[in-house]
Each structure stands twice: as structure tokens, then as C-alpha cells.
Amino acid sequence: MKNIIKIFSIILLTGLMVSCEEDLLDGEFLDAPAKSTLDESTIFSTVDLAKGAVDGILEPMGQTNSYRGRFIPYYGFNTDVEYNYSAGDEGSDADLVYYDAKPTNSRMNTDNNAWAMMYQGIERANIVIRGLRNFGNPEPGNEFGQLLGAALTYRAVYYADLMKAWGDVPARFEPITSETLYLPKTSRDTIYKRLIADLGEAAELVAWPNETPSTSSVERINKAFVKAFRARLAMVASGYQQYPDGVRRSNDPELSVQNMYQLALDEATDVINSGRASLNPSFEGFWRRYNEENTTAGGESLWEIPFADGRGRVLFSFGIRHRSVDQFTGQPRGGTAGPTPTVYYDFDEDDTRRDVTAVPYQWGTAVDGIAQQELTGIDLWYFGKYRYEWMNRYVTSTNDDGLNLIYMRYAEVLLTAAEAANELQGPGAAAPYLKEIRRRAFPEDVHAEKVEAYVNALGSKEEMFRAIVEEYKYEFTGEMDRKMDLIRWNLLSEKLDEEKQELSDLNNRTGDYANVPTTLYYKYEDDGYTLDIYGLERGETGNPGPEYSAFNWNQPLDEIINTLYKPGVDPDNRQFWPIWQVFIDASNGQLVNDYGY
Image (cartoon, rainbow, N blue to C red; front, side, top):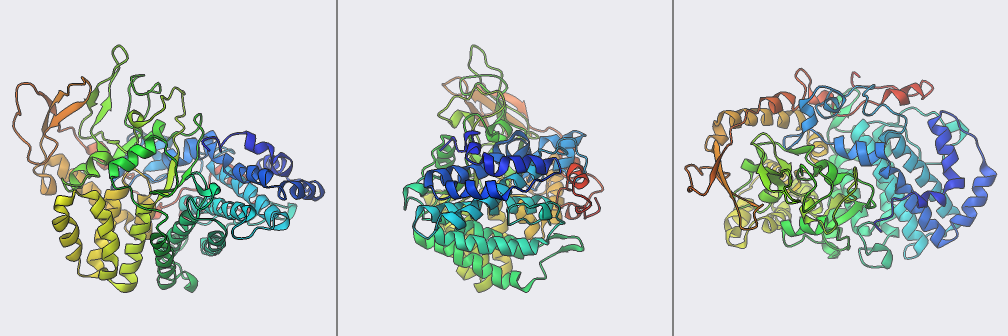
């Protein structure tokens, strides 16, 4: 299954789609219905061939300028908890992450960019969906039904990510013809309604995790993911977002908060009550399992974008930085982004998620093949969820690590249930779900205080909502979903401005950060390369002993403060990327950019 995204999967679809995709990128299209119909009748009436066609829907994600090297490394920055270090430099990469992207961005303005690859995936899905409906007899419980459900879900993933990044986009739910080659943008409200309906159908067709051989891996679509993803889209569709006329909720009554939150609550509780997914008992244990590439379904990970060993750049982009080839990796990469410097100090000191999430060191240059951990400074943190040192494989590729991308996990289902239940029924209904998240986060000996008492004290809907917003922060920092959530909560600019003030307070050791030390002390443990650090905790001042070395922990934070978003820009007016100029120019006048681009 690690080889889903490989070129061989294209072969099964060559006669159906490759030529039309190439023509589409060139701005041309040739209708060939007779050949396509013949090929479809053969492929989609044969299970093994149809499986290859469904796998081929995902292949565009692995292209260099698609999810692999453009969408995953850049989308989702910057937030109050995640900072891309490119923002500190002038240029195209900075523009993408600090809310000033331009249609001519040199990193993105290519005809094989993520926009094109997403539509290539959608076209493949459209052809597969048509073929399975016409020739596969898909029904709940049969293999063709599972395949159709997967195809519907993959198409929804592409559209959800398109709208997350660009807002309103062209809607194609049938294979391209010469009459539909050029299309204007469609209201995202219309697309969301279609996706929610499609996922409702897919949920009836696909099996629960481990219910069949087809759902034994998180690299395959299962009912828990489909329902959870449908809940996510319901929350997003009813949330705040930037429309051409301003930031607001949808005016479509079908997408009202009442309707969508009820749908989200129903789907989330279906997953919870199914017993087919669950939190890993240990937060660190989950992330170790993920980095070890354990893809067995039925646990916390609901679905992962499946990259082959030679594709994908999750660790390459986000892993703890390794400065050279060393005992853990032959790929000296990682560290293009990290938690904002305040995150570590915002966690409760007893929260076991903290030391997994925010890491204050890198792996230095190896000597005789062995590297040591090195402190980096309070201005340079890394995401500890992604670690070469936790892998079972020794990565040697120049550019790719092959680690899957977690698209959704069970913790989000619990927080979705909490948020929806709070809105519809009040804080008492939300409390059990929030408690389950915090029960995993804290040691058992503090549950009475930091789970039960903490949650029970949230007596109003507003208090519960604010607590849920904070819990998302502690649970998901480094997974780059925060931007989407801040937008739908109408908190993007507010939280970014709060973070600028908090960074300033940390910089000056005032306010909530007055007792953060300015000097750390460190020594190495018996293995010779693992740091033993004193001074990270609030109030840890004074020298712990002569065996420790001192390290300055007072680096200036002005660059991060000034580039969290570009000075003079209102992030609420830049919630989306512009459509890249190459696609505007090739649209026959149908595509335009809104939002002042």
C-alpha cells in the first residue's frame, strides 16, 4: 500500500484520461467518446482493473509541484501556533505564507502546479465514477461499491482542498467535454452541498475500518473517515469565510449553523459510537506509531495520503532539522517550519502533548556518523511530531522521505462533536468529548483537577467554545489545520494579532511570559547525544551545577513578529491564494481573481 502513488497506476487509465489531461493543460481538447466508452466497459466491469483506476485518482498528489512539493509545504501558514521560516525572507515563498501571495508567484505560477494536479485528480475521479456507475453495479457491501465510495471521497478531498486554498473554484462533476472545457467559478456553497451529498452516498457504500480487507489500512477509504470528513465539511461550509463581498457565513439556508452542526454532530457521534476508531492511549505513542509507518486501520489515524518511499516530503519539510547525514537519516533535511515561540509556554506543564509538539533543538553536524542534539534558540522551534529518529526506515533519498500525510485523525472527531454539541445543546453536552481529549493529554494523577474540574467549570457556551478553540491548538499544532479552523471561527486576524502581542511579551519577558528564563543549562545524557536541559520550564532560574553548560535563551523575536503576516496586510482580506496567472490566461476569459488580487 505504500506504493499506491506510483506511475504504474496511470497505465490502467492511459486510454481514458492521459491524453485529455495533457490537452487540457495545453488549452485544447479532443472528444473521443467511442474509444473511452469501450475502455470503460472493460476496466470498470473488472474489479482488479477498477481498483487500479481508483488508485490512479491519487497519483497527481505525488507530483513535485502538487501536494508533494507545493501544497503540503506551504498551505496552512502562518497562524498563532505555526510559523514558516520562509516568511522571514523576501520573495515568493514568503508571499505564500504571510498573506501576500500574488498571481505571478514564481513558486506556484506553473501549468503543473497543485491547482492543475487537483483538477487532474478530479477528472480521473469523474471518469472512474461514471465508469463504475455504468459498468460496475456498485452496491453497499460489494467491491464495486467500496470503489465507488472511495472515488467519491477522493474527489471530495480534492475539491475541499481547492476551496480551502482558493475559495470559489470551477465545479466539474462530469468528465470534460469540448462544451465544458472552459468554466467560470462556481459558488463554493453549491460545491459544498454537492460534496456533502456525495459523502453521504459514500458512507453507505464503504465499510468500517477492518470490516473488510479493503479497509484494513489507513491508506484506504473507510466509513469512519468518510463520516468524519463529512462532519468537517459541514462545519466549514457553515462557518465564516471570505466571500467576494466580505467575511461572513453562507447565506444559503441549507448551510445554516443549525443544519450543518446537526449533521456534523450526527456523523461524529456515529463514528464515536461505532467503536471502530479510537484515541491511542498515549499522545507520544501515536506519533511514534505514525513515524514508524504503522498503517493498520482502526486506531486514531482515519486516512492518510499514501506516499511511496520515494515520494512525499513531510519529514523533508517539517521534521526536526538534521544538519547532516547521521545515525538516524541519510537525508539532512527538515525544519522549514515550526511552532511559534510562545506555544511551548502556553501548554500546561503537565500536558504530555507539549514535549511532543514543540522541540527546541536540532541535530547538529555528525562526527564519525553520530550527531548530537543542539539547542537552537527561543526563536527557532521544530515540530516534534515529525522525527526521522522515530522511523524504522533509514531515509536516503535526496528530496523525498515517503512518510504519509495524516489527513484526519480521531481526535478531530471528538472535538467536532464537542463543538457541535456545545452550539446545539450547551456545554454539558460537549463536556464528555472534551474530557476524553484531555484525559489522554494529562497523567492520571491530575485528572481530577485538569480534566474533571477544568471542563466542569466551563459553564457557558462561550466559555466552552473558547476552551475548544484552545484545545484544538494544543492537540493539532504542527498539522496545519489551524488556519482553516481560525477562518471558520472568524478568528484569523484576531488570533494573529494576539500572537503578535504575545510574541512581544515573550520578547520582553512581560505579561504571561514574565517568568520564562533567559538562560538555559544543558548537558548530554549517557548516550552522548541526547540533551538534558534545565531552564525550559517557567521559573527555572539559577545554575543547576558545574556539569551543565549555559546557553543564551533570549534571542530577539522581532523578525517573527514582523512577518507573521506582512505589515499593512489584513489577513482576513487574504484568506485565500489567488488563482495563478497561468490558469487565468488559459481560461478563455472565464476565470478572474477576487479579494483585491
